[in-house]
Structure formats: structure tokens, C-alpha cells
Image 1 (cartoon, rainbow, N blue to C red):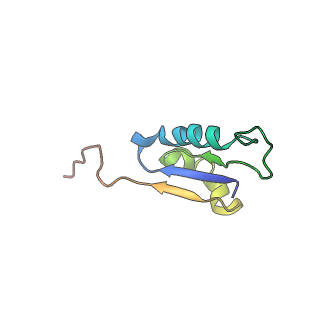
Image 2 (image 1 turned 45 degrees about the vertical axis):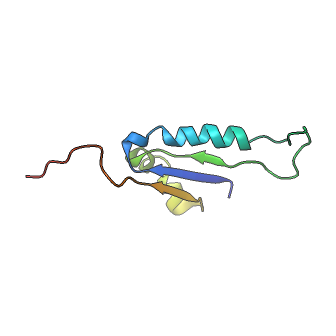
Image 3 (image 1 turned 180 degrees about the horizontal axis):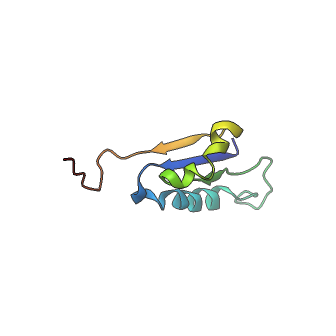
Length: 86
């Protein structure tokens, strides 16, 4: 697949997808080998994502009904916010 969605379900992870973009796309997005020889294949994939509702209103429609894009859903076990139930 040419793309991958990174979907964190925690606002504290809002910078995670851009971090993965930087690591993966810069490292794996080169069109030549370490020796400078052009690759015989397309390098890297497009990584993108947003936490929670930011992504729901931008690219979720494409993921659900437009094309097949692998998705990494990332959640947390314990909330960083106190929850008060009365």
C-alpha cells in the first residue's frame, strides 16, 4: 500500500503522527540506494494521521469508503485526565 494512517485516540499523542512522518518518510523516501543508484521500486509510503475528531472530519471518509489504506489505531490504557462521575 502506498499510504498508512496513524490514528491516535488520545490528544496527548497529537504530535505522534507528524513524528512518524518525519522518521519514516525522510528515511525511507529516498529514490536512490546508499550508493546513489536509482531504485527499481517506489520507496517509502505516505504516513499521515491526526488524533480523534480532527481526522474524522478530514480523511476518515476516504478510509471508510474511498480506498484501502492500512490504519494503525493507537489507544491508551489509562487516561491522563481525571474523570469525575457524580
